[in-house]
Image (cartoon, rainbow, N blue to C red; front, side, top):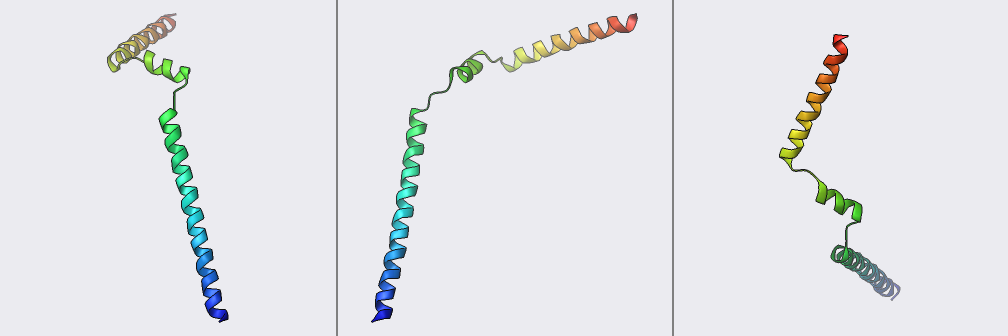
Amino acid sequence: MAKVKNKKTNQEVTQRKQVMFSIIVLCLLGLSAYYFATYEPTTMAQSFYENRQSAEQYRQSRALDSAKVKAERNIFLQD
């Protein structure tokens, strides 16, 4: 009789643990879905992505900067 009662309590405990685990997982999934649905980027990140350069503009500005640095270096080397 004690073994049967012990088995039932063990089954009840494991079932409760499974239910609690599933409830916690569902709550976390629900919260993450809510935050994904209502997320709005900060203004700094938004302005960064709006004002970023295209690849071609970046290459042109990079070439101009390197030409400017080379010219300054040549001026100092001539002295």
